[in-house]
Image (cartoon, rainbow, N blue to C red; front, side, top):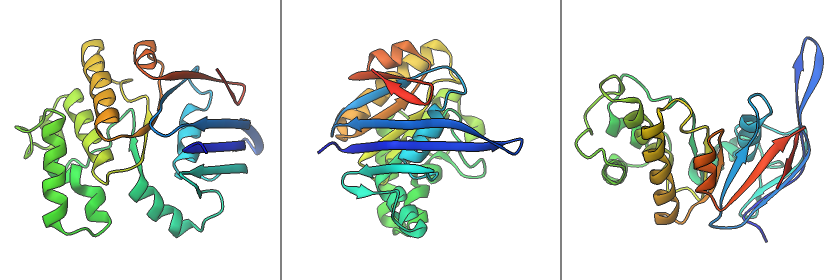
Length: 223
């Protein structure tokens, strides 16, 4: 059985009082340990797809299962708990909390899950060192470059040791050199932590580093 399974996914938004279909009977299967790129034009629904796959949003129809857990039928609070424990998210904009330093931002998911500080802090510090920010632990986001802030976001996404990493245009706000460095980091973290990763991107270089590339067009995925 595939690690990520989505079947018959439909999602529409209401625009001007009328439904605007975004995902139309979409199917997706991703094997455990696979790194898959999702490409497509702006506004085609890549972010929407990642949001429903990770339980940030509900589908209108269809089923989604991650490692056998059917996300489309579990109650909202159970979904929140599952998402926090098993899914890591990296977005185009890092969404770091400006009043907290890099270490505090990275450990935040564990603190939200009420993990003891004695567990959260060393795990977050280890991840920040792995992503090359061992000397930036006490720096707040405003003191970090864009690439460094995104590295903090990667550490934060991995601190709960998720099974799945969902990255939405993770290099879209970075220059080419910084983006290439982040590509390498994502691939390294994918292998190191045995992740199953799905990455939405416009960047063909990042897509080329993945195991497989799919294109989202007309609300469906094509290989």
